[in-house]
Every structure is written in structure tokens, then in C-alpha cells.
Length: 195
Image (cartoon, rainbow, N blue to C red):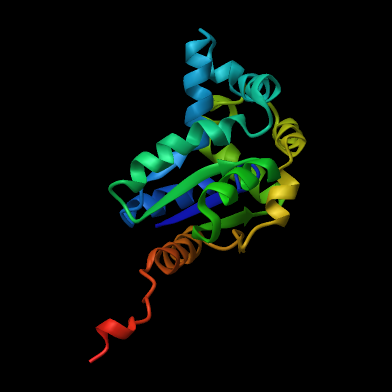
């Protein structure tokens, strides 16, 4: 069993990393899905209210609320798979929740790119400027994410992936990382198994 968590500011490449994991047969739990579901349950517009609901969940249920709601989804996927990628960790408190549950089987990956590169990517997507942020400027999104404690989570990463090269180079780096993290660990033979 292995759980790979990703953390990174908007436009850094977390979604692309999740796509690569899926291509490698690793299921993905997106923490944003918890927020989208809660937004819908509250009868709010996901395009406008995603960030506000994420903040409200943390204020109402504690800073690890979204991570805690993700745990049953992760456990469910681990029943049929050896590894899961968790997309969208936002804080050190969330890292604590995953480390507490999965221990050494949890690897945190920080995906990083400079502001101007991320802004270009988001502009190129066109749709993203409002998909889950109400058209909020990137500076505001970064500020909100950092307010959740993202810098602390990024500082605690086991692996840092610099995403400033080509898309294919990034995809290959993530593919190698996923394969490294999901390879079965050879257990030493017990005395009884030795000839």
C-alpha cells in the first residue's frame, strides 16, 4: 500500500500529475471533490463558491476537515489498488492527517513553478479562470491557499518536482515518480522460507 499526496499552488501541475497517475493505473482522490460535493449540498454555485466553502469547512470542522473527509475515499480505493494519489493537499495539518493514517506509506510531493509560469498556464486554459474560483485573480487564489497553510505543507515535501520544463518532461518525471512509489517492496525472506 502506498499513498502519494500532491501539494502545489494553482497552475503548478497537480491536475496533470493526477492524469499521469490515472494513466499508470493509480486511482486519484481529489480533495477538491469533497469541496465540490459540499458546495452542491449547500445549494451553492461551485464556479463562484468553491473557495468560500473550502474555507467554511475548515472553520466549521477544523483545519483537517477536508483531509478527514477524504480518508474514507482513499481507504475505499486501497481495497482494490496498491496505491492512491491524493490531489490537492493544502496545509501542514492535512499532511499530519495523512501521515497519522498512513505513516511511512505516505509520500508528499510538492509540485512547484514560478508565478509567471503558472499565470501563463492558467490563461492558456481559458476556462480555468473561473472553473472553481469565481474568476478570482491568481494572486488572490495564491493568498487564500497560503492562508490555509500551503507553504508549510510544501516545505514538508518528501519530493519536490520543479515544473518549468516542457509538458512531456514533467509528465515523464511524474511517471517515474509514480512508478518508484508504487513498486512493491521486496520483503526479506524469513528463516522458514530459506532453503
